[in-house]
Amino acid sequence: MSTCVIVPAAGSGTRLGHTEPKAFVQVDGRTLLAHSLDAIITSGVATTIVVAAPEVFVSLAEAEVAEVRRRFAGGAGSGKGRVPPEAIEIIVVQGGADRVESVEAALAAAGDPDTVLVHDAARALTPPSVFDRVTAAVSSGAEAVVPVLPMIDTVRRAEESPRWIPLDNDADVEPVPPGEQPDSPGEQPDSPREYPDTPREQPADVEVLRGDLDRGSLRRVQTPQGFAAETLRRAHASYRAEVRTLGEAARAATDDAGLVERLGVDVVAVPGDEESLKITYPLDLVLAEHIARERGRSHPDSV
Image 1 (cartoon, rainbow, N blue to C red):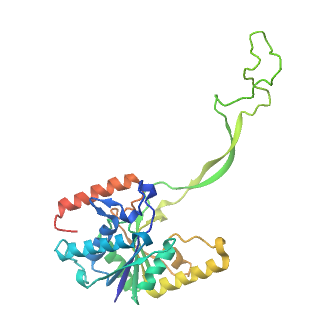
Image 2: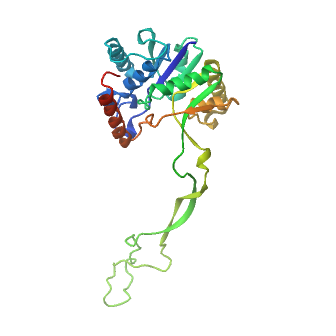
Image 3: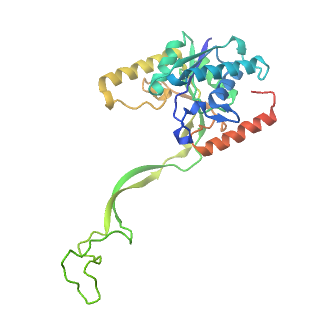
């Protein structure tokens, strides 16, 4: 069975405090894209990897691919899965304006695989075992598979509610109109005065929390998300048709599993991993640095 792993690599690094796309931010001296490729290759599930990079970063993505290939050729990683590193085809394509377009560009270059996995480069430290679990579930007959973790925080639904909130004590008040006589000998004619109808509140939208959600039935969704290739292609075609028909009124696409679910296909869950964190904010980057360095100390010969 042939498997293509698609790596969209165009996400912005703004929230990380970087100007380059997130996939090219470094952790422990190497880019998130390089770490992601390491995990995919080591898992041995991929016959093909397609990286979708922004146009101006295609050359840099190709350089990252070459660096990863050199590391594996030099014995830095053994590739413990079914497909040896040297047998994996790695392609870099120009991505689109958003995630959906990038995945579609990668699908067009992927050939005709049986299974497609879509993996966020931002989850660069995903253990290879997660790739194996997802691929095994698709091979067993599931059309769509996602790795998940239980929800550990209390979760509430937020609604915006219009309210009147008090002005600060030092808020501006109306001055005495020019020419008006002071009320007392000690009052200056142009000193501030509050009139009875001076507003002391202002309108604002306040976020109000409504009820508890049952966290026992909630899951945190990770990547890679795995699909029967025909099902994923059908989901993207259906979404494109909806966009052509409804334009801006079309439902937003947050991930590929969501597009597949709209077809009425069951999305099956397999266990994810806490180390498969999505590196989005500076604190995530600190944690990722720690994990990567600990791995390097524990397994100095691994990728």
